[in-house]
Length: 369
Image (cartoon, rainbow, N blue to C red; front, side, top):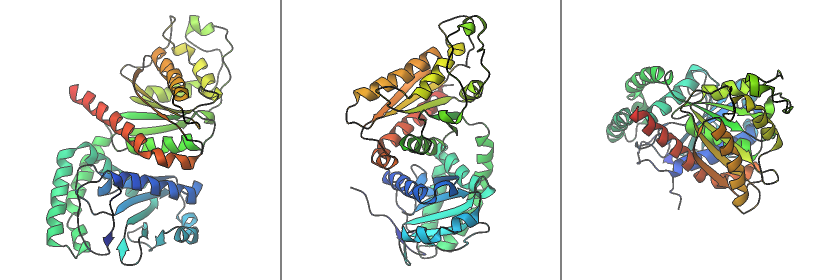
């Protein structure tokens, strides 16, 4: 059963972390994407409810990154119809929307310029504390102490955290430059459907612990393999197109997650054509081009019908591809009953669960090095 959440305006009361907060946040992000469409460059769960293991006010904080503030403000009416109430500029170059009514808050929606200092600070604070439990505990301890002293004065409670937050952000800047990198691939020719929604959730989840890059296979221009076998002797394709650009993204990544729908019980044709063109990197012949070692691969398959065997076939194709590129197959997830973007919300907990496994595995690997 989902716990009640929200808090009376202006008050301070903290609760231990609840896993439901992440699910609520992802459901809200999905709604905002449906409303805002291309107006939002990115939308992410931030604040203390996005940090595992610390005490937090039971209010979901979300940041919307935009390139044009006025374009978003033009949607105030439709946002209000959906329960997102405009409250003006709460900080310099930031706008605030709230949910829950005049005297009770369930969500704070912050709007900033995408990739601005404000955006980077929100993301850095969340990501750093999720990866540094000792610093997260120090932050949580301060919050609990301040909440006891200022239960009815949220303004002072917030101001008294600022020095520690500044210190954490300084450390976070150095840490982000050394983070692992994840590549999440939309293997579907549809850029805005259910597969893209899963890619978005995975990227948002992994961005808390590593740098993420997302690509849609259909955004690249490449031809079918000609079957000439020239690459068997030269490790180079005779065709000049976007395949090296995609493989450069593979090379940059430590973690690779392929998300693929089932088309006739297997991967889509566009993705199969890409795999065929990766023969210069295939380890079954010499010479061949070689990715740097230590890469870890994961697969997510989705299908409309109710049976998992079709997902298993899609996963098998992806893992076969990983094997010939010498990418370790480390986990997979099959999702059924997913035809449209709206169907993904019912599987959010499963997707988040796999992402947590990815993060935990990477942290354990890093600790052994």
